[in-house]
Image (cartoon, rainbow, N blue to C red; front, top):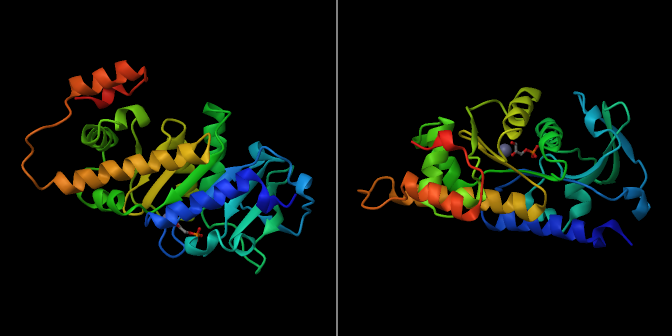
Length: 266
Ligand code: 13P
Ligand code: ZN
């Protein structure tokens, strides 16, 4: 079987297409990585090139990932995976990655590869089943970071009180980073640190990172945060007559049996 026919590969392409459809990934905005549970050799793939990483990814030594290419348009990912995505395997010393599939036009992995690999390492330490790191630029969330306090407690509380489901979907709240230069090891380290505590990290004035055991889980997290941000923007300038109270939030958490950040309530 060709790797393009594998279920995980098709799901990955569908996720990228949905991210584009929802307007989260203009031009080359955003990137998506999936840790593979199968050995790519099973699909007859061999090393085509060696790519230097520029940081230590030895905790992922021998692991393979599907990851979008830098500068590649999400619009084109599903139709032309061979040019727009790659399968890389981290070498035993954690310093390089072997390219096994894709980037056929000479491309490279996303410029956010440090953030993706560091985030995978960080999530795997707290959840060995984590497989997905997803980064994108959802419109309403991005807009919200221009007008809302960037304090994590306040930001999480606003999202929770905007939409009943939020407490169920991200009871740990969301991490928030101030504006930082993207594509660097520094933003990668900061994101990975936050992802030890949260599955969602907001990059102020830039976008969002979501993590999950599955593509659906990571996608659904970002989708829910984006919906809450949209509702916030639709209502923030209007007189508020009703709200989801802290007592309501506690009631939701208890009813759904989720462990939530109690210190994020008022
Ligand atoms: P890449 O094209 O390198 O993946 O970068 C897109 C992006 O969103 C940077 O944060
Ligand atoms: Zn980005």
